[in-house]
Image: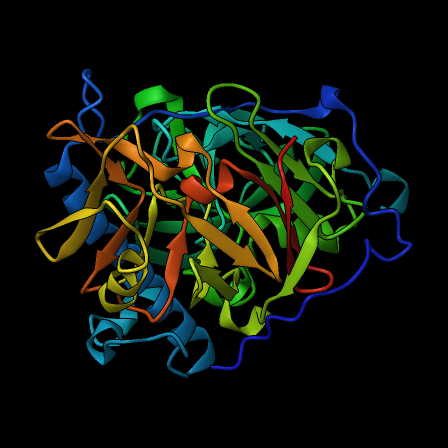
Length: 402
């Protein structure tokens, strides 16, 4: 595993990718706060089940990688994760632009969704940088009702973090998101409901690199189609997630109004599929997968113990293979993540996630069955930074939110 973690000095190259975009192109992201009861008590058992299920998503991504490349993923920890059925997967210029999407919180701080259109049919879909494909529930999108839909004759099967499985046929169709559009964009039409309808969300829109795809090699993630058909001015997108309202996804440009100062840059290896780079948590060096489809931050249990040992006032406990920590809500511990040499200190809303026994639960969890030697960096980090995903220069940008 040789991920680069170089700091790239300065701004974007003179290519105008830093040009700000207008707010009238924004689409909302809807959130709901899963695992939190009415009294703000965290349902630890439910969260523990969620993390076990989240592992199935990453095992599926590891198998997809193996299917596309014939190699084990360099992050893979357990070879058995590749042996769970690798057969699941056999199956114009003046229009270039950018769009700013207001993101809606449909899964209580777990899923971030906005409206997309396939074949004239519109629905809310979750934007997930930890997977690669657009897959929708049956009923949300019906290829039989679209004059532009084409069947690939290929099937797919994949798992997600809530423990569900999606399987069905891959189609291509006309696609629209905000002010952007593309033709022949791949969409997986699931034969069974794999995503809870609560909040109106009907699917997953993967935004990782194509080596994680459950689709055949010729059917790429939707953002690839926008780039290849030159619908976007630049191959970048930007998440700015906020507590409450105001969360946005910007496609095709960088909205400089979302952050303070200048971004720092850390390179990624697109061949590895994930938006992964090196980082530090309270001084402990980690591999970080930046995943908009994850809730709090989780890592290999031995590395998380090392991070916990550097904090004062924690009380730890284990639940079904996960390691949690609580703290006095009036005295939160210092949590700092460092990307490309820049510290991002967590604010009050980032450090804790619900309560347990009158104490706040730390938003970092350890897992002994995490299938890869990497941390999943989810919302708890996003809430303090504007994160830029640059597919043109294979790098991640981080800047403090305004």
